Image 1 (spheres, one colour):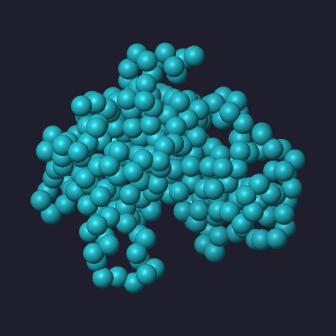
Image 2 (tube, rainbow, N blue to C red):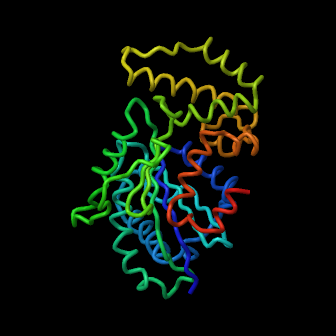
Image 3 (cartoon, one colour):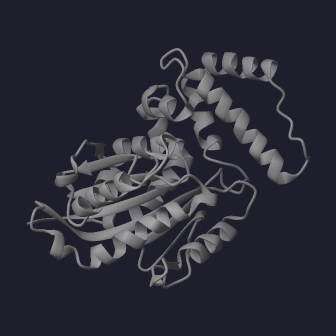
Length: 305
């Protein structure tokens, strides 16, 4: 049976998923695939199938029928034997989504050989990456919050995080623990409050300067961007909303009516060169490349080329 490694990436929102898909494609040649449940490695083959069956068996309203927690994107590189699952967790206020998933997954992972009869692949090693906006907080506060949220999983008190996160040398937006098998990254410009939009918008401005100027002018003339309360929390949130509006507007010619995540994922507004040469993206990539399942000679050479 073929053994593969897995990285589970828990994103705060759908635009983070879109950003990560591009990052894994451009930097690591890990591309999106469309597997059936039976094609996933054990124990995911059984976990996803059971999750869907249990969800379908519940008595619920139609508007809730689609809301169950599966990966938004599946990425794979056959040569490297690495599977990346990108999840949209719904944000910091919805930690039950990833915690419920981990509650089901972790016991199955420990006993994965039992679910390998019908599988052609099996998970060898699994790493975990949590992604959040910095917003108005110190990165260290986000790391502490993440540790407290995910230290124990479920009513059975499954111990997930046995150690505190250690901030990376030279990058205070990144932290890891348990021999780089679990990581947390906070999106913002270095030494600044903010969000992923602070990384995305400069790339779009560089790639599409004329379109950016027109979109920015329209957004600022059509709407007022001033928080109701003049607090740091509100100012950071309002700045992020404005930038999301500009990004979404810029993508309306290529993807009419689409949301920001579709614009980032499919709009092709940012060239490969601009994306891969961006220093903020490189900081994130360097951290991702340092995680245990990516820390191989093959990946190191690929990242340097």
